[in-house]
Amino acid sequence: MRSDPPLAIETDGLVKLFGPTRAVDGVDLAVPPGTVHGVLGPNGAGKTTTIRMLATLLKPTAGRARVLGHDIVGEADAVRSAVSLTGQFASVDEELTGRENLVLVCRLLGMAHRPAGERADELLDAFGLAEAADKLVSDYSGGMRRRLDIAASIAVTPDLLFLDEPTTGLDPRSRNQVWDIVRVLVAAGTTVLLTTQYLDEADQLADRISIIDHGRIIAEGTSGQLKASVGSGAFRLRLHDPDARPGAERLLARTLGVPVAVDGDPVALSARGAAPERITRALGELVEAGIVVEEFSLGQPSLDEVFLALTGHPAEPARGDEDDEQEEGAA
Amino acid sequence: MSATTDTPTTSAAPAVSEAILRAALSDHSRPPRPSAASASFTFAWRAILKIRHVPMQLFDVTMFPIMFVFIFTYLFGGALAGSPREYLQDLLPGILVMTVTMITIYTGMALNNDIHKGVFDRFRSLPIWRPAVLVGMLLADAVRYTLASLVVIVLGLALGFRPDGGPVGVAAAVALLLVFSFALSWVWTAVGMRMRTPETVAQMSMTVLFPLTFASNVFVDPATMPGWLQGFVKANPISHLTTASRQLMHGEVEMGSIMAVLAWSVALVAVFGPITMRMYARER
Image (cartoon, rainbow over the protein chains, first blue to last red):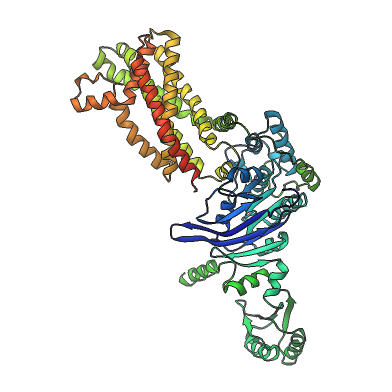
């Protein structure tokens, strides 16, 4: 096993049905050991269900998966011995203190009474929770809970860590702390499977990213590859005057030779796939036409754009925005 | 307690130290997995800790028994046995049985409350003997049942209950009661797994327990009951348990009812243990 390390995670057509709902609909993953693999997708895409199957909490309806060389159904116990799970809803006991939580997990992992206590204190220190050690977890902030959760997951350093949406609902500062923790873990040799609906999170942490939608992997690659697959970077600009936008749109379409998109922002326009020299020319023509450009940018496509290009719908469901608008309209 | 500040902890959160974190990770060795007993006792410890944090959880095992003893002794005593004191000699073992079996309902409610929380995902993803979570909970409940039994017995003694079997007889009766309650709890863990909310668990359990406890020989001699009811009362495990408790406490031991109680206990665990574990292993 040491000489030829197997893939840390290897799935083949993993399917999970909940009644008629195909929550996971044929997922194939291949994650080499020592890497961070991001599974990126919107709410309800099947990320959590996939992770729960790999962590042996759910039995797949069809398909096979091996985690660290062990079959997740036939050798579930061997899988459990080598992985840790940090669930989407903090997998800690709110009715116990932080310290008690860690002692509990250490004891359940087989440590004797005294080593369990020492390990708990060590972890509390490492995760900046020493001061809150004897407070009930129900009084913890979201960020503290998350850190405690991850601390519990590495009470014995796992070979593979499942992180299910580790920063959902956290403030930016706590989110950065979690990212730092993940980086240290990976540097120490732990393989991480990370689900997220944040594109920048996958971009920041993951070596490779699988994009999942409606229970299927629709694209896989490094962040750079995924961006490149969409074509060249997006050219965006914002005008000073919204009334000038129709004119600017006509001008850009003609000069750039690619379709021009008008955003929800009334002064914003964007185009994808235009040649850089055409963009330079178009900027000159806008000045000559007396259209004032406030700002413009040319860059690699964001993962958001990748998602849009691959699925035809944005990664962040636009549903919330529409609801807001409808409510405003009705009021 | 360590010195803690009351300021919102996120903003003042000490930065996670990379160096300390790295050091904390260095140890890759995994201890041998805990034995079934060790894992069960760890879960029992978890339940006891919760009681320590919120002692109000003991309200049911203290107030219930006190209420039951007072109400039934003075309500029925004069009418049924001539005097409350007279009635108490027969009633107290029955009240003990009724109180503790009623309290077993909370096992299912607590489980139902617990199982939907994220922490169960962690428990289920650990390489431990799977029934340990439930066995641990039930062991901790045995502590609660013992406490309730103590309340009933001490109060009974104060009101004039005089067991001829002495301390040994009383202890034996309580032990038998604990065995049966542990077994009965598996019924409620199964119900607790099945139902959506703790409230529905309570309703379901009460619907079963109410007729079981009242249609028994706890309060009155079944001789005056109609024949069909007598049949039910005779088969009722609560009646066997009550009879066994009376005999043990008053030092007139007959193995018949004790064996019946033990047989019921084994049967309950044999049937509802696997059902509960099947539901536990199945996803949520």
